[in-house]
Length: 396
Ligand SMILES: [Zn+2]
Image (cartoon, rainbow, N blue to C red; front, side, top):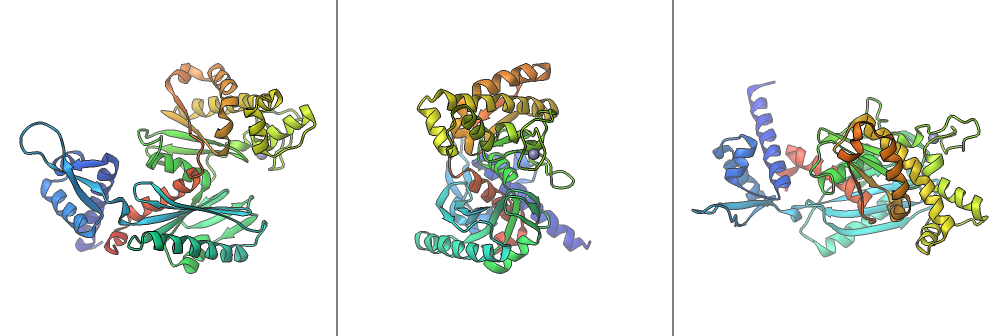
């Protein structure tokens, strides 16, 4: 590489480091910035001046520290741009416009026909995007949409933007990033949905203070997002974290899983299993939302169905803690709305099966139920992508 290329690379790297430090700190003085990054004060000041001109950061009130002249603080201008986070599911597109600070400005959900082929799905996405963009442009005409994060259940090669396979959407080997970029004319960032959620927690949520944590998601499926050394661990074949298909029973009569095997964790603790257990006890068929409501109404069989699932979740929890020894485990996914009914058994089994009393050391956090979790996570990945590309801020 040429000397000019080297200089360019270092400039970009410094820019990225400074931006990330300001973002993580919330607000920070130039002196602090220089101390934390190890970059000279003049380098810091030069880059900050450029960011101020670009409108990417702004100066805010003085810090209240030690006497003498109080330094001005710098903050990210959260509305310098927004990204769209989209979760693509079978029958539903869920999307939110999120600013650079993680605040959801707009959230839309669109029901679409099920079992669509990729081409027909693209048409639906296009319509969805137009509606979201029109609404956003009306409310925030001067705030550009910088890019789009897309989360999908399945095996995703996020570096190359390829969907390898998704059993939920029944698609295989698609250059989805490229297809979407052609369709929507914006940079696209693709990731597995559970990984997105974990990364969103790292960027904006409960995982901000942790470099090493796990995100266990519970709902229609059971997934695991792994944050290791501050970043996502996807595995060598983009398949890390498939905890839903960890065997919890070798019994030949064990319940069958959606994957076709028997005895998987999902066959004991995902929504379908909880519903089946309730039906077996009462003869009543209902939806998962109805079952949660029945538990809220103190239906003992409903509570019991969730609490049995909790024991299996506790087993999974102890296994992942024994494997990874993380700082924390964050429990997320749709079914946190029933956490009150599975937490007790989950904690008991977790404590019984965790080595070295790690259960005392590892923090277990249950996320608050929210519709924004998934889409905010995907948006976080798109925001990081935006912050890490030298060309994106030049365009501001
Ligand atoms: Zn399975």
